Amino acid sequence: MTGFGKLMMTIGIVLFLVGFIWQFIGKLPGDIVFKKGNTTFYFPIITCLLISIVLSLIFYIINRFR
Image 1 (cartoon, one colour):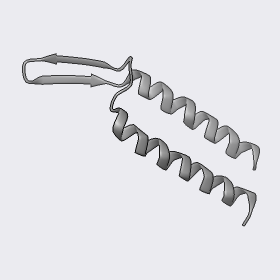
Image 2 (tube, helix red, strand yellow):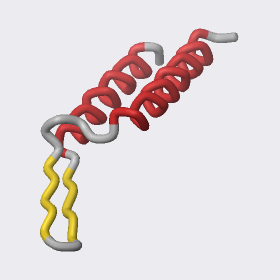
Image 3 (cartoon, one colour):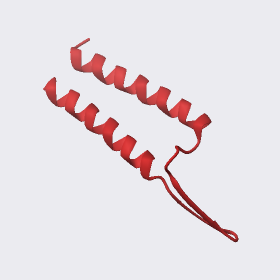
Image 4 (cartoon, one colour):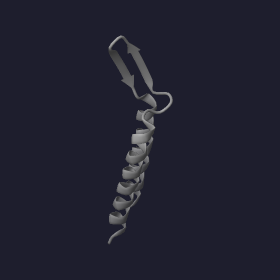
């Protein structure tokens, strides 16, 4: 198996584990939630920042192996 294949498998396992843990955490502190009556507005700003950082690191690592 090539180095790129091992990298992709590792990234897949990490993403699987993060998704599994995320089910139990729910929302992160800093996510904005407004509830009024029977309407709820949810804006996951911290979650978006965290996903952006993780994806940036993944793409940086993939680009280094090209």
